Amino acid sequence: MRITCPLCGDRDRREFYYYGDAVYADRPAEGAAPEAWDAYLHLRDNPAGETRDLWYHEMGCSAWIEVTRNTVTHAVLATRLLAERGQTGEGGPSGEGEPKPRRKGKPE
Ligand SMILES: [Zn+2]
Picture: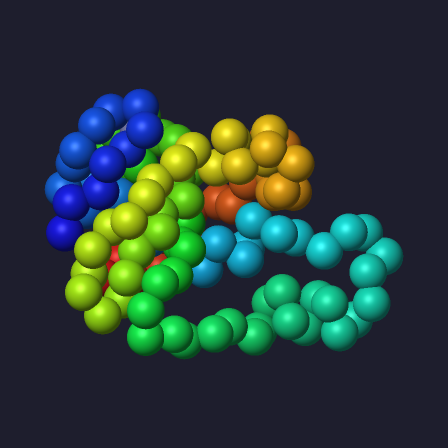
């Protein structure tokens, strides 16, 4: 699978660290209800089709990238910097809230 980093261009997916569903960038506000935190931490859809995931360009520019892809065809439909997502008024991290790469196991 190839992923187009908005900064580096077309790269092999092994340069990237897979973090998970892009919902991780939509952290509940401080003081949010426990149900909101439960959903944020534990509940995920598992669609056959289009997904939005967070990838970290670990062996490149160290940017967080939101990748829209199809889990059935493995086609990468779109990529964008996570920082740009935050600038469009869609929420998301503003810097310190960006996820930290987890180091357990190898990414798929
Ligand atoms: Zn990059």
